[in-house]
Amino acid sequence: MSDNTTTSSAAPMRRFGRFELRGLLHKSLRSMLWVVFDPQSGQELFLMMPREKPNSEAAMLHWLKTVDGASRIHHPNLAHVVETGRVDPWPYVAYDRALGETLEERIARGAPPLPLDAAGWAAQALEGLAFAHEAGHAHRDIQLAHIVVDGANHVRVLGLEVAQEVVPPNADFNTTTRRAAREAAEEDVVCVGLVLHRLLAASRCWRSPTCRSCSSACSRRGMTSCAWAGKPLMRSPSRCAPSSTAPATGRRASVTTWRAASGARWTAGGCRPSRTTAARSRC
Image 1 (tube, helix red, strand yellow):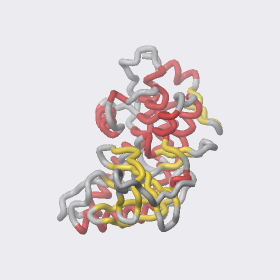
Image 2: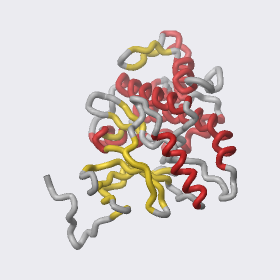
Image 3: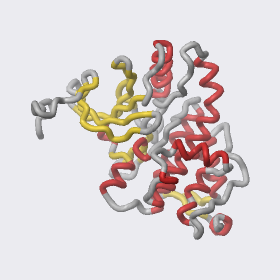
């Protein structure tokens, strides 16, 4: 194993606090994901931080408090938080790199996944997010790079509460957070659908740099995540069937919305659309 602590004089080591920055895996409009080496523990980590630093000390403390609360939520499909902290003026949250590779890395190194695998990954991500939504937390920036899968196809979601709403320095954070919680949960569901669309189509959704930039347009058209996920399978890809109902909210909103909208028969390996759903999806 090579020495991870040495670099050449021509390429000085980049650092973030005590962490050695190995590479930027993903940068969206709202967050950044790095691979770093931690000399203290001797292991590689995923390091996530918001794209914009908190605009006040109160905002910084609110970010740390919210992420710390989210880190106490334990679910098989939510990545375990190794550490939260700050290297002024940036807060961060760290996860074990050994959890697996991101879906973005998986696609980049090989052929597009089988549809059944893609559906299974999306279903697992939704299970974890539904559990987080029940606890009053949201993700707000679901991307392919924020979903990690291991060799056994077990999925974990990274970055819960990393992308928080930016509010004025004198704002009431508690009121703002409560008001936005339901909207953020619905957006998470839509964005998982857009991630599944990307997996199935092996192309960027709407040729956009981030899934979040698509979700508002999707919401304006009254479409659920399943309608978007089915788009590449339809005969006319320029059209998409709107859902008959708006995304559900409340208890188990994420998975309830997904299952109700798709009419899918769920199995241990993923989902299979019913004949009725297949007929409805034709444009």
